Image (cartoon, rainbow, N blue to C red; front, side, top):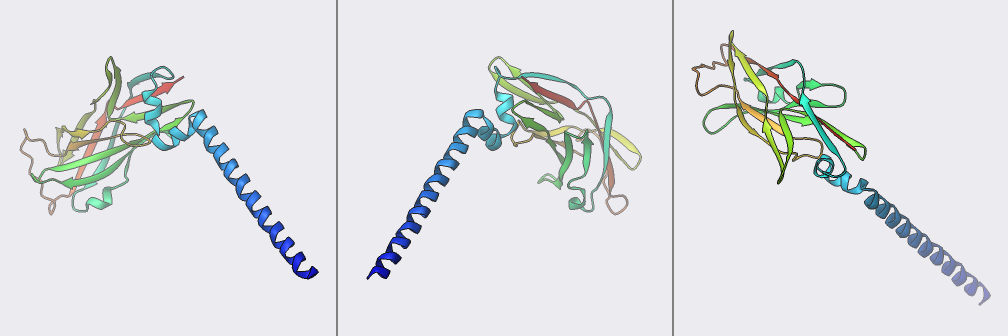
Length: 208
């Protein structure tokens, strides 16, 4: 009888310790989440650079063109081989090739992704888009000077689309590789390489 009571007491003690541990764990996790939410880190972790850009009172935006011309070569015979090629990298901000494709109108397109940095201290982003604060909110516009060279012929190429700060760390922008106003015959069996050059990229610096 005494042995049974001892076992029950021991089991009861173990259960109490386990319950206490779970309570402490829940309180600790709740405290951490609450602290992160109050500090703004949780919102920043979930929504990324947009949190900084949208905080007009907390951060000032300074933007200016980036000097230099940046280029890379694309292989139109193997679209996937181009993905991830780096156009621009200053150690903190990067622009890389997202994809090359042919759309329904048989137009070749190339899209780029920009990736910046962000923390509670501020954020930076180099992009083909210039993001501005305006009276009624925000706007963005593709400001890049873009050319392509194919079989020794160089020509201006034009924007096919761009985005706001739709990603946690940046945005995207794209171009038609062959302009509609110029006769360019693409023959990938003869030459599948086209070179794209971009200048007038924009640096964005959000500071407290």
